[in-house]
Length: 136
Image (tube, rainbow, N blue to C red):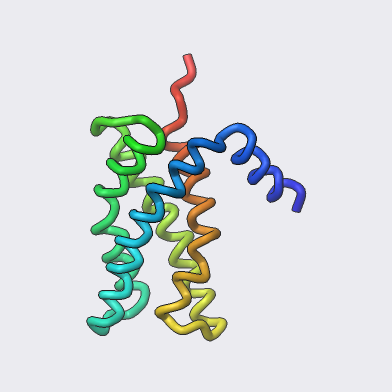
């Protein structure tokens, strides 16, 4: 539990402004992604397929919005690493979504329940694995 809480302390102390930018940009990215997910459900898609489509359609938009506005990085050089990290976070998200569904959460709400955990995980992965400053 102490290690889990230390993640939030590091975010607050060392990454506060960046994390707040991540949250602000993430609100837009999440609204688009969640909207696409709900649209998929309304079209009769299974939750896993709706999530896959929402993540696939949002990946490029999220790369540019998050990369430029949050991490102050641009260009195409980091796109492959971003897509790999994005895929890993997707698998994590899908695992949590399926768990929420198995616990009886309705499909429309299950993704909303897991979003807070996915947001923190996404920030950590992007900050440390994709947009981390290069060491000399």
